[in-house]
Length: 365
Image (cartoon, rainbow, N blue to C red; front, side, top):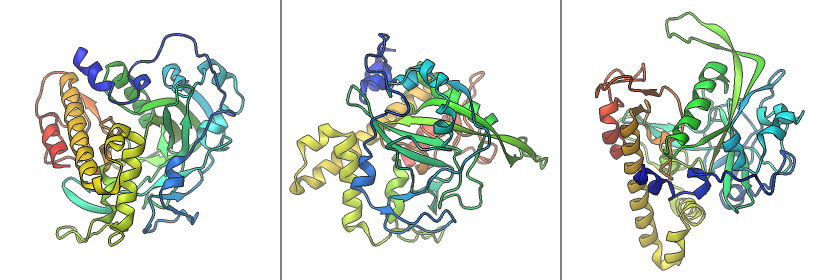
């Protein structure tokens, strides 16, 4: 446990261990301090067209959440909300909380957008993916000067939704909420879940994958992390892949967009590297140091997963964080008994992302 705690302190201290003392600077959802640095520093697609489309030359697309009917709170995570200087009791009593936490109304200072990224899925480059059902509300700076990105999963269509509906259902959202907070309690780096909202809106799903579709209630999870940047964020510049025939939407725009993206991530989330090598002449050195640390953090993360029998299920490049934290809880599972060939993803016929193959999959990514 001492080793895991040491690893966890590589990211903001409160991400690993929150103080048990009462919050001294309690905020409300109306008074959060938003400072949306990513949207200021990186190119943003200004079109608000939510129709599926290729987004070229941008890291984000402006998009507002799609309202749900009669949103209401299912549960809150007291410890996760404390990251934002919020009291769960106050949030629970706030009549506007279901509206803010569902995306039906925007909190003052929020500036919603969806992130454009690509990914290798099951080893094959899939081209543009992006936030198909998650919308970032912005970045909140708390009283400890820590920066937290707020994201609503299940908040509606974006240009990256492809043929999907942009929604998450209550069944899968409960799983994500519980596992996010359970992984935190196990001492494993992870995104956090601050709230779970349900609604009277419904989405059609096939929960048993047997062709029997049902209407399920739509739900929204408030995700919290320093950033949701991932390996696939840097793949938007990839030339046409020989195997899949697909390329990134911003191929040919690497100069200066790739350096702009790299420098933003390093300066904001790896300040120790930036401080040592911020000059233009040190570009190669800081990118090399950044790469080495991402590799190191990812290796330690997957080692932690193996220690507790966690199986992620879909270790594509679009599902691995540049911070070495667990993101995107989909078809995950835990070992009930030791089985190295355990597969938790029903679509993983080859076992590429089986429990025993997780370290190999992360190395490939």
